[in-house]
Amino acid sequence: MASSSSNLISLKTSDGTVFKVERALAKTMKTVQAIIEEADANIYMIPIHNVFSHHMDMIIDYYKLSVAGKSKEFSVEKLDNDELKDFLLAVHYLNMEDLFEVLTQAVADRLEKKSVGYVRKYFGIENDFTPEEYAAIRKKNDWAFKGDDIEPEEDEEKQEE
Amino acid sequence: MDDDRISELPDDILSYILTMLSIKDLLKTSVLSKRWCKLWFLMRDLHFDIHNVIESEKELLEKGHLTDVTRYSRTDRCVDLDLTPKEFVKRVDQFLNNFHGTSIDSFFVNFYLDCQQSNTIDRWINFAMVRGVERINLLFLGRPYVHRTAQNKHYKFDSALFSETNASTLKHLHLEYCLVCHPTNGNFTLFKNLRSLTLRWTKLDEMFIESLLSNCRYLEKLCLIFCEFKSSMPKIVSSSLCHLKIFPCYLVSKEGYRLDVDLVLVDCLKLISLEYHGYGFDTLKLNTPVLKNINFSVSLEELNAFVTLCATFPELEIMHLDIFLKVTTSLKITQQLKHLKQLNLMICNPFILDNEECDPLWILNILQASPLLQKLTIMYTNSNFITNQKNIRDVEMFSHDEVKVVELGGCVGNWFEIEFVMNVLKYAHKLEQIVVSPYWREDEPSDWSHDSVWFQSGRKRMSEKLQEAVGLEKLVLI
Image (cartoon, rainbow over the protein chains, first blue to last red):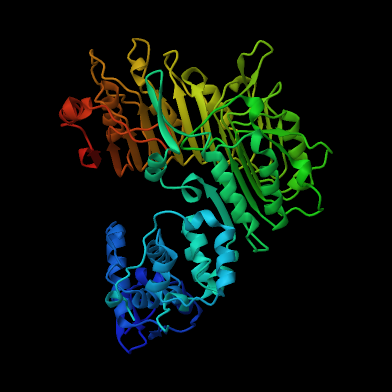
């Protein structure tokens, strides 16, 4: 079991799995670090809310890559928007600067150069503007809405629900 | 729809993501929904440059905003001055006109603009000031697609225009390729809370700097880089300044010639770091008792005088020197640098050292004068392999009990490099590692260079000559 003198810290995810991680990795999680520092006695086990075991798997992957100087090889391409959003929230909760930066950039990359219609369809964002309001906003920065951006596919069958 | 997962992220995360988008993509998100529109206004850092306002480099070339211009057998990538500034200004204006955020932290513009856009730029600065901005960067050289123009066309920064309110939130100001005038009303309110000021390729009267220094009680950092003054370098007198950086500044004579202006006085009781690349070392007066870090350019002949001066700084720990070898003479260092922990030397054209009178082991003299030195880095720039290689000497009267790490860069396999390595290996008793590599570069943003002679023959030569050397296990040859 973990004590403050050992090199491993026990973290318990929301789905009940216990991960024993290196102290150095725990240090990259500012939330966890704060809990360790505030505790008077030795910490037995640290529960991490909002973080699931599949998140921890990815966090450990990223840590291993970055220690080997290969953090650029880390990819979240296989995650869909749902999963990416949940992962981002978990990392945000744990307050992990570098990984947070990587994930927010990943979301930004998914938004880059796409047309409004594409983004709306891809992320399922509901348009709550009236047609007049919508037209007015588009007009204000008209140059941004011109040009060859990536449009959503017209094919109904390919739509994601 | 109930798939709006990305939107379930809280506002602060979403607006952070927005800062990573180009202005164009950012504006597109503003029509997604009312909430996304509001997120745009939560942005606190407004940064505008050619890539995020107009297009990526590839698209700029395709659309004719950028062209390759060849002049005197040199090809530069230049911005189309007819199309692009107008479009840039129009887009930034539109953005700002529709921006409903009431508070921002930083406002940066990096694009070629000049006095033709004066009114617009004044308006932008006002926009930022009204929103409590803390950092302003106005870089009008337009890097990396630099465009130079006559000085009388530069934008004129008149702080009096922005000094209406009593309070000023401005803490960091960086101006490039501007004219800075003394505030017409003598009012320095705008700068009252300034913590750092950087002026690059800027023309101004030295009186402005001197007045600024006495009016800014909190100024910690001042950088004057390639600036043009009226008749002399300002005297740097400040009770708050901690960091000072000066790159060669000049004045323009009546006949139109550029003449160097030298730094003459630095009287700053709190100064921790000083970087000066210029001349006039013999007339320089420094009152900087807590100086920790110094970075200068000196010629080899001035070295002893420089070290003597530095010996008077009781807290000096880090020294960086660019050494120009004009005259080769044997060098004695007469004073000690008692607290120096780190020394970085950049030695330009070291092959000049190959002269009967020169004693290249002068570096060991400096090492000896720094008894507590932990790390020594030497970079030879623009080195050449000398045809008549001399024999390697054992210096015998050398000893150092502290230095742990030595790095030698820009090597080509010259005899004086090998001689230096051999003596360090033998006589630096606490040495953990000495790394020898051919790579060098002039300054941070430049690319690394190296001379191929190292990999062809220099490295092998050094390796052979050092076969019998004491302490060989500490040597790392790249």
